[in-house]
Length: 241
Picture 1 (tube, rainbow, N blue to C red):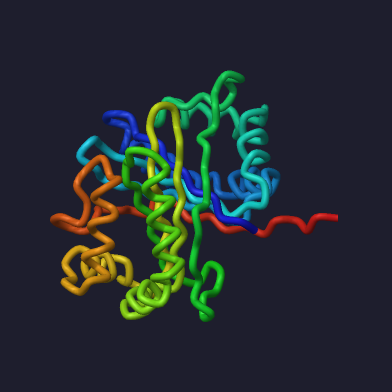
Picture 2: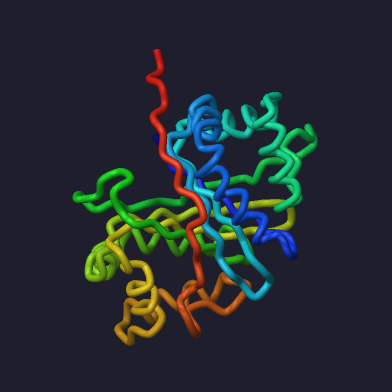
């Protein structure tokens, strides 16, 4: 299974609606949600919410071999659950999956790192997003971070218990974002982010300078991003024959 991540704004005053929606997916409608995800070829779906200066952003992370199949399956699901699901996505995000003119976000996995001890679904997870000027800055940054500076990067993550980091760019309409997905021991992401924000060694200084150059908003200033995991559904996908 490959990993796929994208983000979408939460419309004004719809955060509580999203919280209720995900609670139903993980609660009263769990069986239907699992069946829908199995039909779409999803092994795992996570939904995070990040508080930003421009409002709440939802970050969706999928483990799937075919993201296009997920979008298509959910867009055409005529069951009561499928109709209910799309209705909530439109209310919360303004996204109408059934609209044939809707263009799915263009997602690019720039690169990722996993420690040899990483195990699927066994670690805490976080995701956060940064609005960026274009895909070029994150692409160059990640290429160097996991290229010639990989040893420094790995040491800096393992020091705080991070076991996996995946880097994406997301092009949606006129906006471009970088999305980072992290897995590790409890509390590992806040500790690693804080160290990146304040560390005075050359590696952390370089990291901050690179991100500030392509980010639309100031990064690595103030507190760790406020991130809430609202959904984490795992389910076996039938073997392909």
